[in-house]
Length: 226
Length: 333
Image 1 (tube, each protein chain N blue to C red):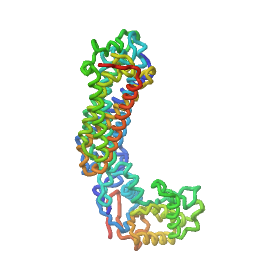
Image 2: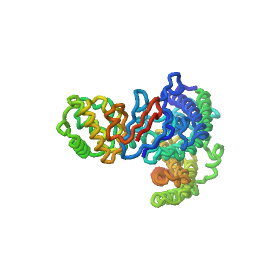
Image 3: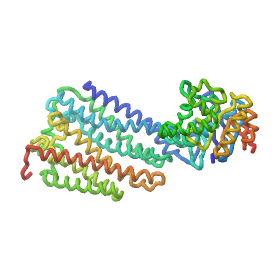
């Protein structure tokens, strides 16, 4: 489903402080599976997820999504692709303070131009699914860590994307919440979503949900376990 | 040089445009030589990012090019009072040898800029850059013309001095001593008027047929070009007489003045809009079979045909109303 060919990403290219985050990675990521990118800090996990999720462009190499080459796409095409295909869950959840949990979850749907009521219904359905319906109208700063994580997940799913990208999703969760989060991801996988996770948390890497663990070090694949 | 605001705007604008064009030309050469969408090389990815920037630059530059034509004729008209003998832009442009060449270059570049913008618009509509090499090759062929235009315009402006004695439009465009043999060749005006309305009917008819059925694109494009040429000739041959209500006053510039309700601006705007959109239909014809463009181009061409027909009708409408409402009656001309 997602194919990477000789993907390289460097920062400050050509300058004395050039840093190569990804060093020519080639791989095939299957649809409807959960792949975990594991590795120490600075190994290139987040950069790789950003490249796959069209958040940044490679320095060289190509990425194909469902046979469509996406690295050459101008930004005006990437925006829509990103919105429809990918749902993002960030390490710092990036929920916006001052507005409600439901409004946070609805935000990525606004640019698509759907009717407000339709977006709200989708949001509430997701809140029901993640058992946080009672918190829909609570300000995000009042939510617990677990609740905030679920809101972030609802936000990632509001546009019904095929691929969920989660960067260190359990970094701020305790063991119980981390396991609960992985169970929810398992449910999404069973529902047909493709999961791409970056984590060095054993709860994530050793979870039954993970179909494949790719160990990264210094921007290269060190080990690929299925 | 005369320090008139519009002259300074054109002067600085054209120099900036030339620098941007030269910068863009460097990338255009690189794109022509190195572009390979199948490659994932660092250079290719840089070029993909750069082309977005460069084509955006060029879209603004050519947008300025379109505006600058009208600003130039407006300026030439505004400054005529500085020169002895000048009654309108015709005299201002005749004060040194660079005025009319600049005007002709600007007119030519106006049309080329419009066509490049159409190509760029279509190319940007799809994601696989199907016209990238063609539009940059076209651009590179266009670069010398813009640079010559800048040089000619700068030469024209810096040689402008007040109180130069020049000729008025009555002398320049007269049938006996005028500088326009083409207009003279089409006098008297009746055959030209007949040809004008026949060309209008054909252009509009084929344009509507193209809009409805998507056929005869090249024919429509050719007719648009013919209508454009005939319209220019008509302005000299008979349209100007009715606008000025003066037989034998053929000036294409006096009509830009307030005494004539600035009628020249809508006339030239619709005429040039019509030729660009009409000619654009033909320019796009060879590319309508290209995979990703096969859906986009036919709809763009139909819109262009419609725009061209509307512009032609507005132009002809203005001309016809002026003829019908004019107090001038020309018999046997």
